[in-house]
Length: 172
Length: 305
Picture (cartoon, helix red, strand yellow):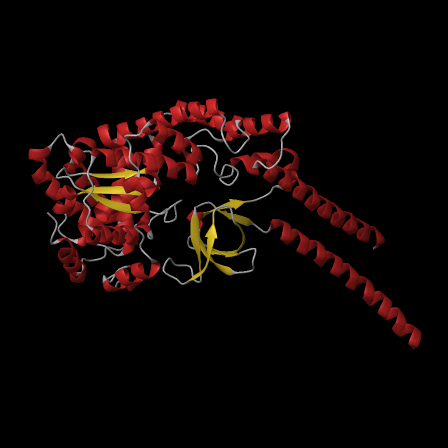
């Protein structure tokens, strides 16, 4: 009787180990396939909900890596390296995916094509300074003033609400 | 059973190995890109080759590059037109504009969208790449309500979304620029490279200014911007007929001012109205004009000279 029980235990153990191993492999696959998105604009808000006038969770900067969790209608739910979770609009980020089957040639190719790889290369601040040194007649004063004209998310929300626009529109 | 276990372990080892290799490769790539360390001749050649092969058209211009091109184009526009320096009106234009932006195809760009009124009687609106949008006092005066204003701004936002400014850059300029950028692995350009790149930058600005300010975009781009305007305005909740009504006022006005601003750089209002009406008929939802919006429009621009 006792021996029989032992036998059963042994035969139960094996499939358990095997399934554990399969699970481990699967988890690793999932980890590898986890997509990273990278902020490609100067700075942006990580938002609590998938809409522009939702409260801000954090301010993100160009080049920041985010883990993609979910997506819905133009919005992507992400997790920051600091563990904060929120939503970003898809137009603000670039998806970075590493193809492991093309490690030798692919990675470099993928990296060079990326916005982030080219960050602060190309037509950049240095080129602008060189252009401005050559063209003293061109003034950037109002360009800088324009950049200071900002409309906050709260102002937009109020504006939409009062004007019966967006989700506050009744006649749609 | 043992065989299966062996294969599973082998698979596990392969995956772990692949992860390790990929990490080191990524590290190498980022080191190069950060300009942190010295790179070998082979690496430099590889980067040059791939960046040349991969960056070939306007679509490959990065957000940051678009921003720097846009700043310069905006500065050029501002050297031709004086600014209508009125905080209330400019603030209002920025709010209407950004309300439309969040319902557009490209709401997030490098440094956001910014709008400014130019102090000119000329009827004109201009969109530089990177979201610098200008409307003249003349065009603002023709707008009778917020729906019309939103339609005009949405048309300009459409040009930015569809990158029409960047599309007017001659391809040869980009080929040259991408070649130089590919050759320089360091973060700062060497003097001769910088001079070369600055020359190309000037030509790029010239290409955009010629289309944007002098001759106007291709007709197909104007029709596309009209269609985008209807879509963005309707999504925001504005009556898309605002654009058709605005264009109608342009017909009666055009006799005296043809050859200037919008009349010179855009297809005729009659042709555009026809196109716009067909598009509105195809819209699923057509929001109606709200009195509150017309009232706030009137009270804001009542002092416009």
